[in-house]
Length: 150
Picture 1 (cartoon, rainbow, N blue to C red):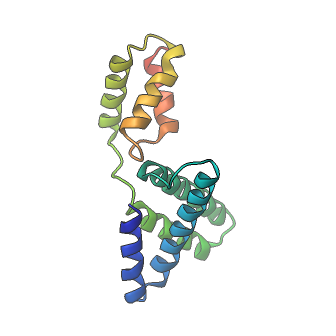
Picture 2 (picture 1 turned 135 degrees about the vertical axis):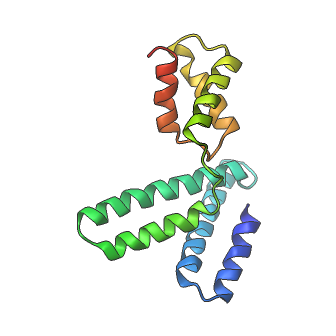
């Protein structure tokens, strides 16, 4: 995944696409920071799953910032944040549809044998393992809780 981002960065530089170049450099910097932290913990490098989580976090941060800029009337900064979100989303897997999320939750409940709220963590854990970057886990957690009778 990192190679894909680096290749896109080279293309953006050649095309003189400053917004894309800046955003991809921010992504690379965040990955490099995560790698340094991982080495400090005794790990070797960063997995694609960790990069996906990092990209999701970056999208969420920019969505919050764009919302604040919109409230403050700073449409120029809001547009900048939204443009960065679109560039970052290019590297995330396509999100599952609502129907697919419901089906995935049902499958995870069956797979784990979950019977009540105390099994919620198991179900969400299976979803996170199978669908990284494809599900909004905040929303999915609420759906799992409802499905388990909460």
